[in-house]
Image (tube, rainbow, N blue to C red):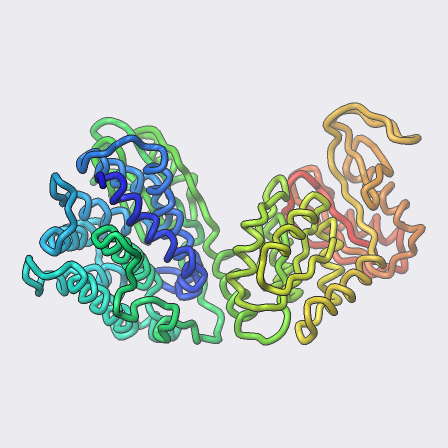
Length: 536
């Protein structure tokens, strides 16, 4: 078997184990910030290596090592992914020309991986994945070079497990949260998959190592804390690739250090992977373009991720039914959480998540009774497909808008099963009418309403009801259309994109058109639609 096939098998093993454990790893994540994404970041980093190997053509040891090193760096996600890429870099710097796997090579690889990982972090912290890789390397080093590979791998994994179990003793934040370190546990999971693949390659058959080193069956990696996590000092996790010639790493590091924390710069003078937690991603990127070309930019709101993690864990601790909803807009997401939604799938611009994304959200909750709110007519079929693919009891409530989804959430009762909840929530939908205000993308005529491109239009229950030159004008017309339903409650969700009237103007218009309705206005933040309305 050539070097490429060896590497591909080990990456596949790591990815398979991570896929099974990433939900738990996300839940364990409280350090350096409780953003609940360590499992996902490790999974995406390893998947980037797999994608490179799937499309690459290197077969020799040097070419394969170079491909794995580069793809892990380019695909590194988050703090944990960047550190993992450096462990991979060190491991790939060691290898026999014949690609053979033995204990002597394993010892060198783990030692180099440890050195590279510690070198990447300016202020190494014990009780993290750094500690775990160091203890794995130390366990290997205690063995003779000619020890059987199975014996060496068993010792490495056993030592790694002990190191993970000890992480709360080394980090107070882990001890207070009642968890082991997410990155360290994730590294152990990766190593388990790699080790089993290595032994299978050596023996020609699937091998299960005689050590309890995974979460499946292990009780040491559990989430027990009940209190919401404290939000991180800085808000945005920002990472990108910087490419150029003679990149001044030290000078760039000096400029970035005052802008945030968790700063990592790894790579060489021609390509750097940059990771930093900051309140001002724009300033970080503006600083970077002075030195080279930026790409692979990823910016995540860690405060939103922390709130999602807290909601997910609260739902997992609770008994009964949970809700997964597709939602666009940060304000809208927070409203759904307040209404008791356990997990949010980001709708983004198109509001078209995949069935796989919905299934990932369901699996992360670890509850058998699940209600899914698509909140868009285009997502209903996808949600039903996801339900058919899952082993969970999933009921899809066909909500076709964010306001109708909110109306359905009011009827949600976690103490009854998914089917009973779906019945009550669908009943709530039938009593709800929704409206959307947006901008026409082309000239058209629907019934008696004539519309020109770029004109503001209003739809009630999906039907064109009004057109005009301003959002305020169309809002008043839409309220007039909704008045025939005599609603008791009116919910208005704004995008605050510069064309939306002020809350005071909206309240005045609603009071005039619907004097008996209870009106609530929220900044939803949804794209494309300046205003969304729910009338009940």
